[in-house]
Image (cartoon, rainbow, N blue to C red; front, side, top):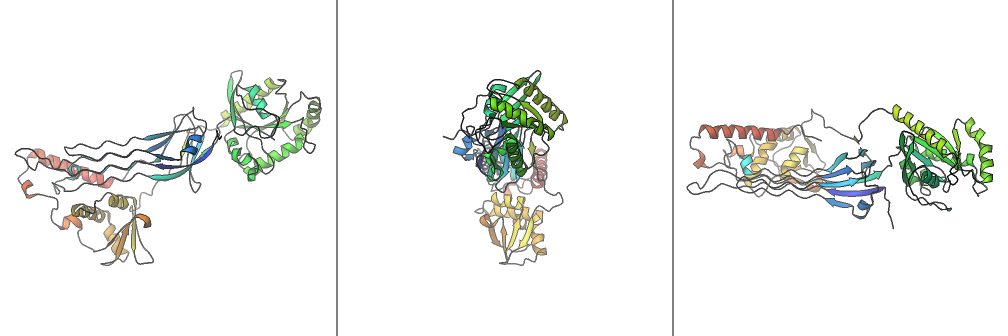
Amino acid sequence: MTTFVDRVELHVAAGNGGHGCASVHREKFKPLGGPDGGNGGHGGDVILVVDQSVTTLIDYHHKPHRSATNGKPGEGGNRSGKDGQDLILPVPDGTVIQDKAGNVLADLVGHGTSYIAAQGGRGGLGNAALSSARRKAPGFALLGVPGDLQDIVLELKTVADVALVGYPSAGKSSLISVLSAAKPKIADYPFTTLVPNLGVVTAGSSVYTIADVPGLIPGASQGKGLGLEFLRHVERCSVLVHVLDTATLESERDPLSDLDIIEEELKQYGGLDNRPRIVVLNKIDVPDGKDLAEMVRPDLEARGYRVFEVSAVAHLGLKELSFALAEMVGAARAAKPKEEATRIVIRPKAVDEAGFTVTLEEDGLFRVRGEKPERWVRQTDFNNDEAVGYLADRLNRLGVEEALMKAGARSGDGVAIGPEDNAVVFDWEPTVMAGAEMLGRRGEDHRFDAPRPATQRRRDKQAERDEAAQEFEGFEPF
């Protein structure tokens, strides 16, 4: 049964925003007391958070579809809907988040760091929020915006200071078991280690982590054996330790050829040339192993390696090795520049863009693409003429109609707003003024035309400012 998973594809869905409410306040002797429809609640986000108690992605391997809750719709009496609950997904330290094309979205390192994988949809405004001096009693509300749907890839890269690399059965698991409190599976057959093992080593006042990476064989960087699946766990380590078997029973192998093969695989994988390396000649408790270690040590030192002769079984040479590793880890930490614990890739939008594009397609259809126009279309109830008129006003103020004219659109031409699989298509009729404004104060009631007291005038002014701020929406967090 699978117990360790370090790469999964996750399908996340944020919550949809709740619909706004169109309501009119009514009470005795005041049948039309003004709009009082509340706003819809925002949908919940899907958030990935680093949790030190989580060491594998196996939960998402078995349940790859995760969803946050939707926002509740608004109600009359100026009651806003409840926001949807965020979905918190714990991930191991060192998780890299990518899109399906392989682009890195975030690299999460450090307990508590987080990334919003899917943004919840906005709640729709109720008619109370849409009212203004020009539109005193809107007979419509905005619909909630659907939440994001994302397909992402989670890839775990072990966070450790030291990585033990070498052939299967070279003694890496035995070595980590005596240097730390880790208890990996140990046996005398190849590929005993099927998952990376982590241990914490204390050498004097220094404390560092050490990882036992599953055994590598020739061709590992191209996917042979287990190497390709676990070479990624070497990437974050500051020091590489070649564990060489000096008592191998295979006649065609020797420590120098093993070292050359593993170095070639690391080179093919890439990105590890600058990591300091040392060599550990293991199993010197075996008489032939001790003789072979003494024979190859001069050649290894001539190549520039620091060499340590140890025996994990007999506990020989371990103290010198642990303090040497502590020294190298300390030097690597001191040389490493200070940076944020997590890396999130942000792709800001250009500030001088109009916010939308108009393109003429081969079939003669004009397609409008942009965050605001597409969101406004999703918020519109097309069964309500007032809501359609309000949409037309917003698009006109944004400059969509002017852009269509410049692109060569004429009366009766087809215009689509949104992507091909989910667009609103209509026949365009150019106007000087659009929608509700052309129809003369649509959404008003003549019974509201009486002189307004000073308090009401101040409220109307504030409502106009609020509406302008809602239209601007220019600086939103990523």
